[in-house]
Image 1 (cartoon, rainbow, N blue to C red):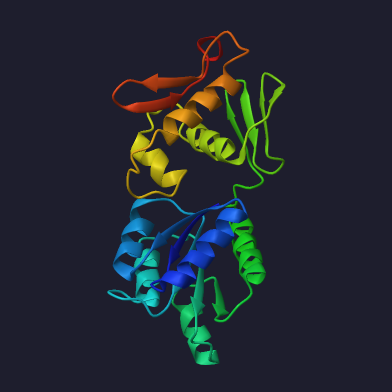
Image 2: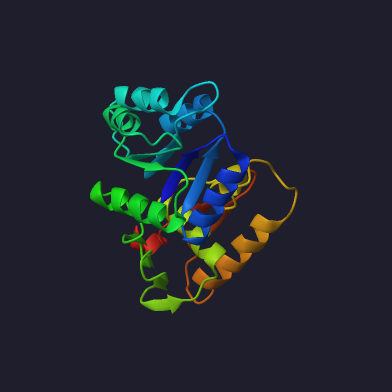
Length: 228
């Protein structure tokens, strides 16, 4: 799942990012309400996790703006405000669930996964297919033309992102942000190394390559010509 976390407390945000990343999800962090609203309106997420008391734009106002655009992405409000009236206000503002701080991460994770499944946004049980290449998020298996391909966790995440964007050029910046969670270029060859390893695994034993380097632009995953 791709999860937007809008939380201004740095330590709380790091805890959430670590927890969701270890659970195999893709958390994106916004430090204030304005940034969170911009991300919610310009990118697609499976679940939103919103603190109520945020700088620039509070969590409930953010959620109302999202709902005003007919965006029904499931939203969980995570707040220290736990009185009955606070919870009711949060739900009436468009929240699908409300969890008070402090909380157990295991409960938060379960609630988020239930929200995603309820709305059909959970990608963890879906299968991605591009031509003869198939990736199963639930079993964490990858096969090409029926042949099993063993990938490391980062390679799996990289391939999943490329498959979701099959047929289009994916830039280095996009990969840094979506696969490595870097919002800056660390000036390393980490992407080149992983692309090379991934290409060696999904193209090595087959006649036609699927993972292409588009010089000066980025990378593209496409169906072999004989499958188009």
